[in-house]
Length: 93
Image 1 (cartoon, rainbow, N blue to C red):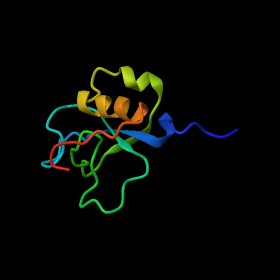
Image 2: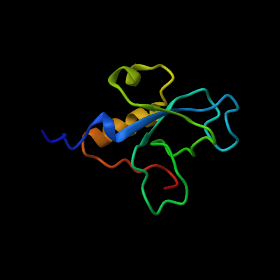
Image 3: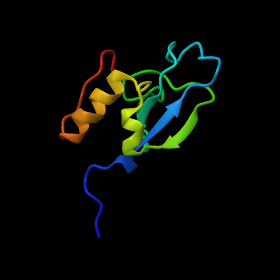
Image 4: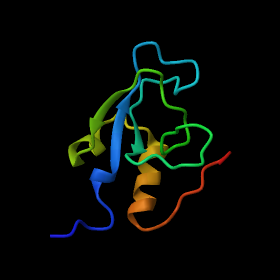
């Protein structure tokens, strides 16, 4: 049975480490990123455009995690746009 074009399997959830790295999100938020990082980018980034923390805690994404209050609002909005087939362009990208 073929997998639908859009699925949660295409994404992962990361939780920043306790240090909240210098370059990553400064809030205690969880972020989403594409499981298959895009080639040609100068840095690995989350869906909201933030840099990945140095020691992220990776998790497979599930529907229940989309209801987590700590989920970055911009990551959620980008995920929903991609689900509708839109490509959300983020500032600075």
